[in-house]
Image 1 (spheres, rainbow, N blue to C red):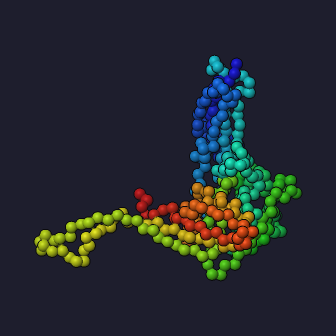
Image 2: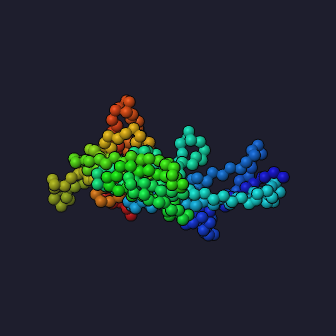
Image 3: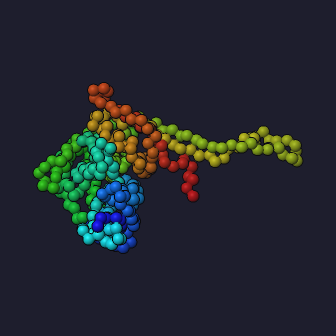
Length: 328
């Protein structure tokens, strides 16, 4: 008999593989096969994504989960299908995404989890490099070697290596410790006039990535309010004080935005800027605090050395909260 129905139990959990418990069962889904089809497909990406929460406070914590898809197949008599039944598949999930041209379910990277081969840091400031621990054996920063270990726990699958200040080159090696998977050039920028701002965002690989804006910054305040007209006549004197206004404001609040300039960067940074624009989770390091922001700039014109010689990107961000505290 042919397969008629598939029942999917979806477990989502953290820790080591196979360490799930009964409460990690998050979804039960059942689907019937359409007569003209030969397969039953389940789309689980959005379901899993609900259990990856990005709460960044300049702490760079690994954000990934194990997903166990436990599927039972039934025939036309609603009896368990005998061939390869039940089926169990385990995946490690990050909150990343692929592009249309990469096809369905692309595996994005198993080494350094950034697209660009260039990183720009202020002089004297350390940086962070996200790597996928399963696929990396060692990382050499200038002449310092760091061996990468993987104990299978989700809390260290994504590791953020510290790039020491004034470093120049990072080489990421495969697990054989011989094959170079990625070489990253570190540019240390001396900026004596402007205050560099650090922007952190969740990139296409589902990890935190930093981008520094080195040049001119401009802050703006947009105020919103409502108004009403009031009667200011004093009945006892049949007059009114001229120091009292007829128009009154209420529900006054505001939103602060900041305009940042990256400074001159290579065209290799186009990928990084693109992922920043597409990110749903962005923060700025501002006056000693990590604050959430939303990119206001919606249009990106890619710059190249042929067309523009030197590339500087100007980006507007809006702070993701009201100026007057309205949290209740």
